[in-house]
Structures are given as structure tokens and as C-alpha cells.
Length: 311
View 1 (cartoon, rainbow, N blue to C red):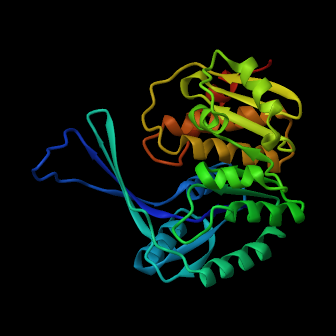
View 2 (spheres, rainbow, N blue to C red):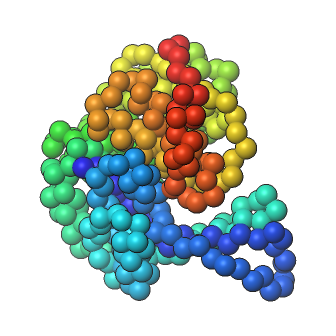
């Protein structure tokens, strides 16, 4: 079983419009989804045939509604209740653009966080792999993910961490390391104080190897958009590329990539297949108008198109 963690989930509401009329009425047919990065991961893992349990924090009427949406998607869930209302996030897709309105979410008390961490400790010993995705809500310290990684590490369970900013900094500085981190090129440049491009991979490799924060992390995967991704794994470097596509909806592609990685890591696959599964899932999500959903009928076509070479 794979445990997915979403600490700041949302009811994702998508509005598709041919034209967004400013300062006027826009009539829409919304599509509502149990959202947040970890729940996108959960949906894709379900499509891949994995047993999944979603956990995190939820509260209020929106939290109850999120549970109903997860039930509708067939996602088993065990969220810790909080007093605050689960947030709502709105995406307006119009004229080739995507305008997002993102609520910051509720504030979490120390007692609520402690209850969740106790429950996480109980769940993690029962699973084969953990994914931790997204931002932390207000009231949760930046080192929360670092502590969760330590809990999973003590249980011998691999952890795939997909976050950024202070929570990623804290996890990299901690003694217990995640199994995989997946910053994009902008995020890795921010971390390193560099300006690397996809043409600078040898220098990126040297810089990461010399940075003590990344020592002991088995997988450092840097996503580079249309340029594919580069992965640094146990002293080796791999570049994954594929034929470019015109994305229908790229939202959730990074989460889908994490799902593919988790599926492969939990199954004990080799390095090249880990990368193929991750990159295939990311690309198939971008081909689907739904978020955290794969165009499975194109699996063989896309999977066989992924090229992985050792650098």
C-alpha cells in the first residue's frame, strides 16, 4: 500500500470558458475535485492499480464534502479532523490561459498537528511507500515534513517528498533524508543560487554532488518542462526525454510524475523504469483535461516513447 499525505488539501473547482468577460456575468458548469497535490497523486496511483490510502488534515463542511469526493473516486482516506474549514481553490481556463484563485487555507493548532502526527506514525508502519506533497497550512512549522521523513525512515519506509521553499530547506538540512525529491529547474536554481539551464547538466551534477544537503538522498530528480527531466541516483545521472506534445491541461502533471515514481519505487523497479513510469504519468496527465488523471489508452505509446539515457 502507498500512503499519500496532503496537509493543505482543497476543493479544486475548474471553470472552462471560451472567453472570460471581465466586470460582467460568466455562466459556468464547474468541475469539482478533491484537490491538493497528494490527492492528485492518489487518483493516479488508483489508475495504476495500486492500493492507496490518503491522509492529511481536513475540516468543516468543505472537509466533509472532500471526503464524499474521495469516496466517489474510490480513494480510501484517513484524514485528521481540524476546526478550520478546508479551502477552496478555483481555476478559470479561458482563451488558452489559466487564471487561479487559491485560498490560503485554515490555521492548524498545535493539538491538531500533534493528533495528525500520532496518526501518521500509526499508518506509516503499515505501508510500503509514502508520498508527501504540497504546501503546509498556517500554524504548521516548516520542519514538519522533516519530522515525518524521520518517522518513515525509522520504519524503513521510502518517502517521496514534493515540496518547495522553507519546508524543502528544512527537509534537506535534516539528518534523516527522503528517498526522492523532485524540484523543478527554477526551484533547484533557487536552492543552489544558480541559473542553470537544460544545457548545463554537467555543471548541475557537479554542484549537487558538492552540496552536503543532497548527500544521502538516493534520488534527486529535476523536472525541466518540455526539456524532460534529469535524475541523479546513487552516483549516476540519467536524462529522460520524449516527443513534445501540446498539453491539454498541465495542472497535476508534477503530481502524476510523483505517482509514477512511487508506483515504481514501491514495486522495486530499476532506475530506468522508475524514470519511465514517472515521466509517462506526467505526460499522460498533460494530455487529459482532468487534473490528476491519465489517458490510459495511450499508455503504451507514451511509455515506449520515453527515452532514458545515462549521462
